[in-house]
Amino acid sequence: MELTTVRIEKPEEMNFILGHSHFIKTVEDLYEAIVQTNPSLLFGIAFCEASQQRLVRWAGNDQGLIDLAVRNARAIGAGHSFIIMLDKGFPLSILNTIKNVPEVTRIFCATANPTEVVVGESAQGRGILGVIDGETPIGVETADDIAVRKQFLRTIGYKL
Image 1 (tube, rainbow, N blue to C red):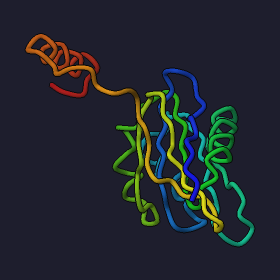
Image 2 (cartoon, rainbow, N blue to C red; image 1 turned 180 degrees about the horizontal axis):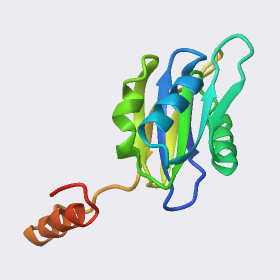
Image 3 (cartoon, one colour; image 1 turned 120 degrees about the vertical axis):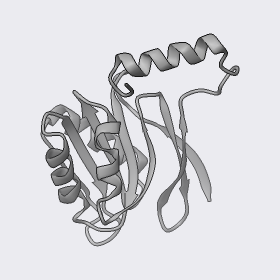
Image 4 (cartoon, one colour; image 1 turned 90 degrees about the vertical axis):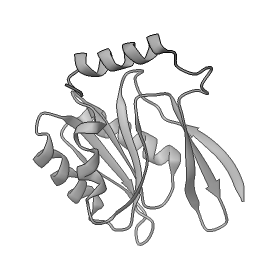
């Protein structure tokens, strides 16, 4: 097996969700789940079909995000993986909905960080082994850091 990494291509602040599923209807089900949960979210989805025609299937409501999702899916090239590129919202607003789509088997990450996907390739094909999400920690938070974190979460409305 050969191991490689694939860097996710995206604008610096853009969020995305990378996951794995098991069926061709994933694209339609993810689309429906997103628009029913957060209709104002702009997004593009790409799904790597693992059998039959083995196409990159796609859906979304923003052509630029669809194109970006397709480019990333093709670069990763791992069967039954999907990527959702997001704008005008955060993964947190749809993540539980995505996890509850029946054919979704795993979420690898949901982030805006620079990300590398660890891919294993054998004679049969490619699979995602994990992700490198952001950078290595360089310390432990202090009491001041805790206060800043708590204030930030309240400022953006995620905590009361």
